[in-house]
Each structure stands twice: as structure tokens, then as C-alpha cells.
Image 1 (cartoon, rainbow, N blue to C red):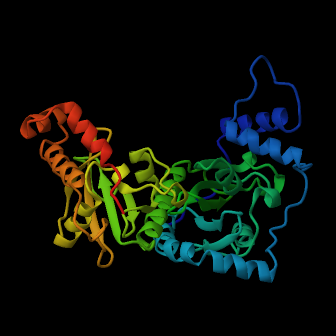
Image 2 (image 1 turned 180 degrees about the vertical axis):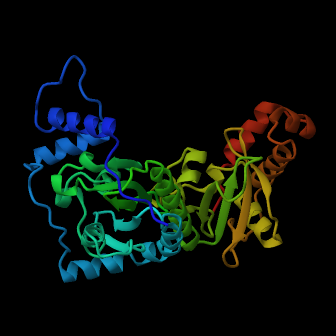
Length: 372
């Protein structure tokens, strides 16, 4: 059973038309109130105008050259592999809406598409026009779309009919969400588009959720010694952060949730060591993974705690050197364990050890980076 196409809700259609007259055509606002549009949409329209475009220009969905398409395909092989299962699930979820999924790289070039609506009508032909691998759907090529806006704003968006800059693209409705790689860089976007369809703003949430699934798959496939899942205590596992940790305890990759939870960029260029994030020895995470511990509570330096699920991706080398440990490292480890046993309560840990809280803080601070 399919959903019939419909024209925009009259109030919505009127609001979009009024905004176009004011923002694009430069007409004065009707009455005292100007038409309100999303700030990101105004920025996109302004970029199109600054580039010398006019809405009446014809839009052709042109593919990039053969050599360029080959380079794009090679560069995005991992992205396409991670996204393929998500696109298949999406195709089932939106099958009755006549929307379809498009995956692009960071330049707006199509690198994969989901199942297209069946049929030989005009809507199906318009869908096939843009849903082709290698087609340039960037803002510079086709004006304001969810694709260009998501890539420019690094945020999810919803775009309907006349909110597209060019008249030729006013038949589309689309949701878009950016995609970020394990090191935090924008690597592409996921788009859900329909042709002459009922407006479905809830697809913005579905696009964003699906984008996070693709990002998580990329993190899980990222080379590392330890994959660490983190959640706030009491929250469902599998919905939180993912960290890739190398044999020396450095964070080499992370998903968006981990970056937000730890308030860190967690990019390779930042060279963050996990001893700077967690108030325990990185070796304890590797040991827990080898023992097969399902979940352990880990204190953060902020005093917060997370539930961690360590998983060794291959036999891990010790983080510290193989020589005899130094006394200060042993002391720091004993204090970390006492704080952990006290569930992050520094005062209780200090009483257990028979030392002052100031000493606990000083010893922990001096041993934050594990010697290498």
C-alpha cells in the first residue's frame, strides 16, 4: 500500500512562497511581519544568490567525470560498506512513503542509493534523475537541498518543495543528516528524498538516527587494539559512546556520542591518551577485556562515572613499559583503585588509605599519563 502524493498544506505553501518573495526576490514584507525561515535556509539561499544563481535557471543532474567518479568510489569504499546494511533497513522502513535514500561523500557526490520507488510515472523518472552514483548534488551544482545544507551546517535538516532554491528542484522533499568519521571529520551525508510526496518532517529524525548507525559501524571497523563502549550508568547499552584505543592507550577514533559524553574532540591530531579521560590505568581496561568482563564502572576525572564495555579486537600489548614499575606509578594505581572502590568518592578513598584528600588529588594528577 503506498501513500498518495499530495500538494503542500496551504498554510505551509503560502509561508514558503512569501519567504521566497522576500528573501530571494527582494520584495518588502507584506504587513508588519516578515516571513520566518530557518537561519540555515536563509544562509543557503544567500549563498546561491551570491554565486549569481536565479531560481528560474534549469538544473541538470550531471555526473562527475569518469576518472573523478573512480577516485570518489575508491575514497569512499569503507563508507559505502558501512552504510549498505543501513540503506537496506531504511528502504524497508520508508517503502510505503515513496521516499528513497541517497548517500553522498563530503563533496555532495552520490556514492550509493537505496531502493527507488517502483513505477514509470514522472515522479519515478525524477527520482532516477538524481539517484545515480556519481551525480553531483552539491549546493554549487543544484542549489539549496538537504544535501548541501547538511554538509554546510553539519546538522540534520528538513527541506520541503519551495524551500529548495531552484524552481526545478521544488518537486522534492528531503531530510538530510551529516556523517562524521571516527576522527570527527565530516565524510558525507545521508539523504531521504521524495518526489511530489506528502511532507514527512519526522524523516529528519530517521535520517539522523540512521547516520549515527553508519558512524558506529565505521568506528567498529576502525583498526585498534581495544573497542570501548561507554554509557551513563542506568542507560541502555549500545546507544552511547564508542572509543577506539591503540596498544599505547591512545584514542584513535570515536563516535559522536563519545565525543559529547567526554567533552573532547577525540581526533587523531589531538593525540588524547585514555589516561587523560579515565581515572584509572589503561591497562585495567585491557585486562578487563581479556577477562571478558561485560561491564565495569569507570571514573572520569570530572568526578562523573560511566559504564564501560571493553572488547579486545586482537591481543593487546601492555600500555606501560615491560620494566619494573616505579614507586609513584604503584602509588597512583593503588589510589585509583581506592577511588574506584569508593565509587568516585575521594573523601571516602582518602579515609580508607589514611591520607588526605589533597594527597589523593595530587597523586592522581601526577600519574594521569601512563609512562611509555
